[in-house]
Length: 131
Image (cartoon, rainbow, N blue to C red; front, side, top):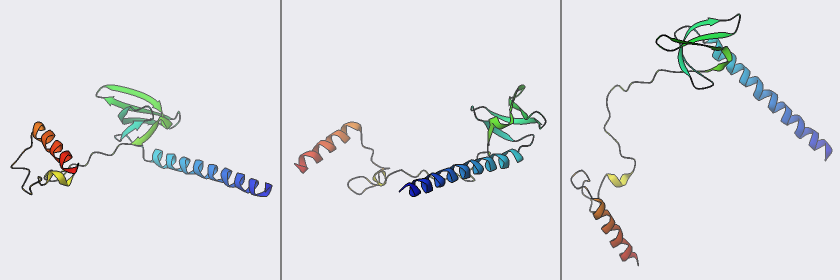
């Protein structure tokens, strides 16, 4: 029984070191991509563009808005912000549920719009039919 306990403890410690090593590798990969002009986000939620990188002191100068600069530690920059993808052509709006495609009689919902009072009446009538 005690051998099983030591094996479990060993596996737990191994997994902790493995996760820590993966995190360090991801951070190193991220920091190798830093260059002036890259949009980034800091660990405390500031978004900005890298203006300057000081490798000797591990500092990054960010331009938060035109004319506003902030100097942060290199490890505080945790994410590179990708530019938002612009849709090429507007697609027609797709409803979230199938109930909005047709009404109860099978007609198109684009031609008949149910008012809130009609909805309440319909729901009450359905409740009476079920009873």
